[in-house]
Length: 547
Ligand code: C2O
Image 1 (cartoon, rainbow, N blue to C red):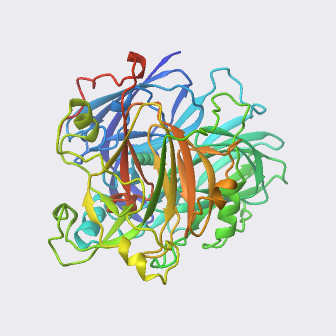
Image 2 (spheres, rainbow, N blue to C red; image 1 turned 120 degrees about the vertical axis):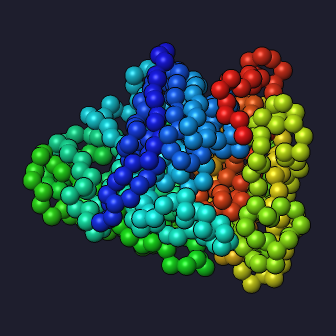
Image 3 (cartoon, protein in one colour; image 1 turned 90 degrees about the vertical axis):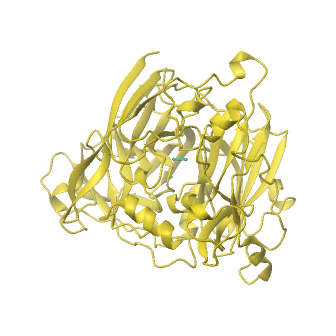
């Protein structure tokens, strides 16, 4: 195994997009930032120099960080941010996983422009499918004409959702349906009669996205760096945080075809969302640019298509790194997720007893709205036994049982007016954990992509309405459920996940819609050390940023 070393200079650069010039924070001056490629078993060393005016951390989305939790990256969870003018070296070994992951800033809204692909090649040199001719990252993103930190601060002051983005992007480019963008549309040149692998990543902040290429079908072979049974489809759905490796056969008439993405809007009571379409162009055999064929994308609210895609995936049970579903459970949790309102002012004045009559938007898990600690991080507090940073009392069950998904049910008000606090769930090393996420309709149903750091998990079941512990359990797939690190919990429904807590550390579990994370849709799972040195988290590296 090799040591792969990179230097990330996080700095402000001037870019021109959608007819505007604007300063963004980016890694090594590029959007997306550098693609990192490793082979499973390699050690990745990334020196991050923060030359920007903002606090920065980098998270390696989906990487297990086995015994290297200090390198995970979420601000105030595993480290304090790298302050302007400071640096930190992330060092970790990538084991037991291969496929497509990505990296992004994990502080404020900065991941809007600080992100890139992380490709893990198989150690054996072989995929569990024929070797593709070539492979390309396709990173879907979101673009704001304003400064994202200002947008975030303003939303927090007002207690509202941040403004919609001004465009979606493919590999950093909005595409030719947007103003002033034609020249810089992403182009993928292919030759006829080959198989390509697209490593698709949804790096958007707040939108699930449908992705299609006109006249072509995809074979999905992996999601979230975990192999799937080959699944043929003409549309891919990705929630923010998710990835999909798809094979594309270039078997159509040689000409130009659009690839296109636009949102799946699951929120019922939300203000009208951005419905614009980002495009790239697939060009056969170096043809000149002729008007490409446009695919027909699903309607914005096409929940049946979204649900079909999500429920059709199964894991490839004979592939390397596959693991069986835990069947004997040590921890069983039912966790409501959703938006809510809280009676207090700007976030930081919102701890404890409500002190401000103004209502603000908040988001909760089991009616707790997660508040990040200020200093030190949760992992530091856990490791060094610092009291008063968090409480290990995150509830295993909702505070009240009722009809979670009936909007007319007045009891749903009982899951409103949540307080902000830093409640975590602490589990024993190697505990087997089941979490059923239950969406609520307190402020309208919405599909929440729930992401767990440090692990991936089996998605053993999902459905609409309230989870029925007797009937729904009978339908669980305990044989070959899809393995993911981010699951889209159906709007007005539920999803059940299982994993074995074999990696000590402090792992944030949160909605990957950035706005919801900011509102508190998060908690932390602290996994205790095991009995042997090989099951204990080592001390932090000496350059771990302090608050
Ligand atoms: Cu992709 Cu907590 O992050």
